[in-house]
Length: 601
Image (cartoon, rainbow, N blue to C red; front, side, top):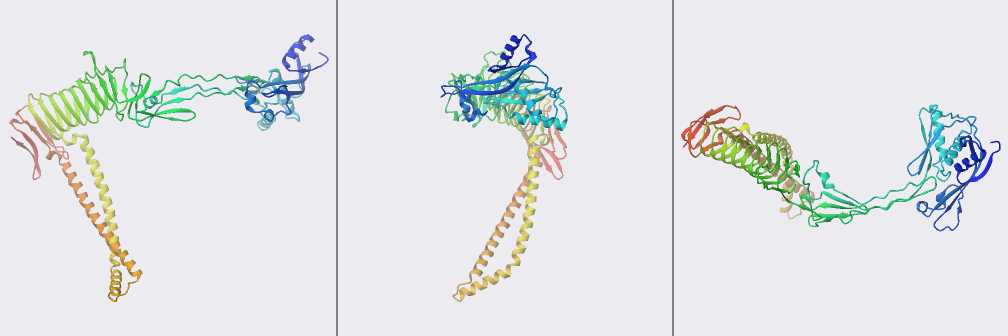
């Protein structure tokens, strides 16, 4: 091609291909120079195409209109198509990359490029980039992201650091990306409150349990090639799906969502499409296959009833965890199950490898597992273990009890009972039982002693500080006594002579009286604190001597094959006997420096 071709183009790439075809030469052998260009637009109120003066589109229209589908853009370019010739100094190797919607474009410059720091290099780079933009049908000028500044940043990097060592991303164009719509959705916050996968989800008053996110319209966009980008309408699926019980759930609404809060303690239930907070749940059984674990938490007001219809299956299956406030089980509790509750009622039996922790009362028909409770009421204890404050057993066959007080109707053989205060048995029908009073073996006993000792130390320290303060105040007050008498005499003398005492004397006298009253109150408070401290020390001594205050009661005959032991919590010395015949009460008594067992019938 010897003679360049000058023409007005709206699609540079198509015109390059057309000229190449006419000239019978490969298209990649042609290049072009941009001589000038014009931008035209047609808006919502324009009947004819409008010529844009300059490059700032927002000076002639608005972003809202640019994003609309009725807005049109086009450019016309005056170009000179010529034979491809390399630049004498600049070898800029780069590609143009865009995002999905062509709303952003960057030039990715290959580090193998030759970019000389010569006068005019900025315009050479800009010209090369604009020519490639037109080959990609991207508009120029109106969407530039301050390309001169970006080129200067590139040249400064080369000046400071030397030639590029890795691909360099140079922003060249940015238009208006579409804003995608937000479809409505429901967030089940109550499921996030529980860290485990559980059948029911416990909530407390004030907990955020549900949220309905309103649908939100998006915004159409405009790409760097001038094309309109349409976005879909948001989908609305769940607007009618959230119906609540207003007695147990409240709602708050703003522009983004409706948030639903628990109005009561319990668990979330959806019945007949209505969300509510319920307190009672009844199921046939709890197993990994059917329900999984049920862990709502004992702080939620939830009562779980398990009514098993098939008698040869466990009501609570093997390995299942239950954590509710109240639990009522008609059937059996399987192996390796773990129960946490405030109150428990088990109508059948517990497996020997089950673990039950109850903060208040546990009532069990046949217990073979491990139980910790405040109070335990057991029909049959068979080789199981119980730790509690109060234990009541109808029949005990083997097993172990550690408690403050223990009451047993019938005790058979091979049981171990350790108590802090009392063991009371109606009748013993076997042997090999150990009835032990051992305060040292009770965890709460140690905790109480530690708490009281700390309390006594704190009170002693405060009393000593207050006593020193009182002595200081008392000495200061005594030093003022002579001055107090002077003010009193002056006031009395003035009153005797029918004169008004001076205001200063009256005020000072009132101040001294107030100080005297405060000192008296301080003294009385010290005496109260001393009495309180003495009472605490007396109580602690009584606790230390818990073995002296405990007793074992049996309302029938001993057969000589059961061992009774009292253990001194300080010395750990054992006082043991295997009683025979009629012995109703066994106690430990202090006789001088010695302790002796006392048997009464």
